[in-house]
Amino acid sequence: MKSMTPTLPFNRRRTLALGALWLAAGGLLAGCSPETPTFKSTDITGATFAQDLKLTDHTGQVRTMADFRGKAVVVFFGFTQCPDVCPTSMTTLAEVKRLMGDRGNQLQVLFITVDPERDTLPLLKEYMTNFDPTFLALRPDPAELKAVADSFKIYYRKVDGPTPTSYTMDHSAGKYVFDNEGRVRLFSAYGTDAATIAADINTLLSSP
Image 1 (cartoon, helix red, strand yellow):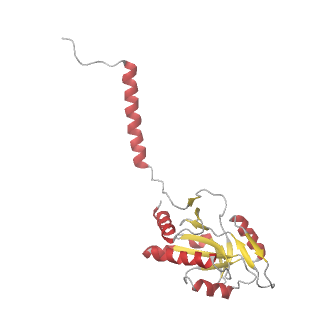
Image 2 (spheres, rainbow, N blue to C red; image 1 turned 120 degrees about the horizontal axis):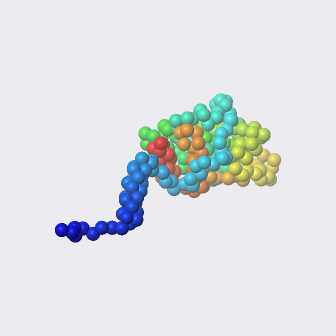
Image 3 (cartoon, rainbow, N blue to C red; image 1 turned 180 degrees about the vertical axis):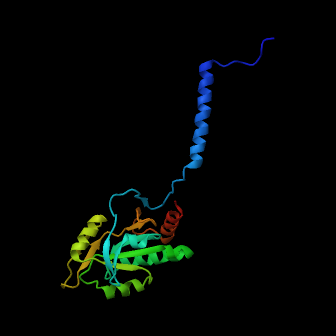
């Protein structure tokens, strides 16, 4: 008796079989591939700038990014006599650490002065204490300042005041965020709220 089961043409059967194999392989790959983290800050993973630094901190110790392996690092450029942008940014970063809870000890904030002429090490130490005693200020000499600013693509410019010592400094106000392997990963624009930055840093710390 002739079978009533319909027989598909050979080419169609082969196409369906190959399609099933591709679907199965895709499922396996999806299961094996780590999920790419998403951030609210600008993701600059793979950037060839902001690679490292070598500057003296407010305790007199020379620091590089290698000193902070195992921690997320936020780098911000400013100066102690900044009237608004810098204290606002540092207050935000202190709140970021608080919001991170127990993970706050895995955060290192680095403040790099763009005004080494007036920002002495004792003054920088006092300034950091106003926000968080674990935050570190770094003081480049003028030649180092230009090199590190260029490396981080940071703009700064001295703006003369009515007296030689009453000048101010124009400067970039964003923050660079490094992962716990010392790789620059994120750029956080000025005005980004603490909750957003804390969430992004927690995501970084949770990523493989």
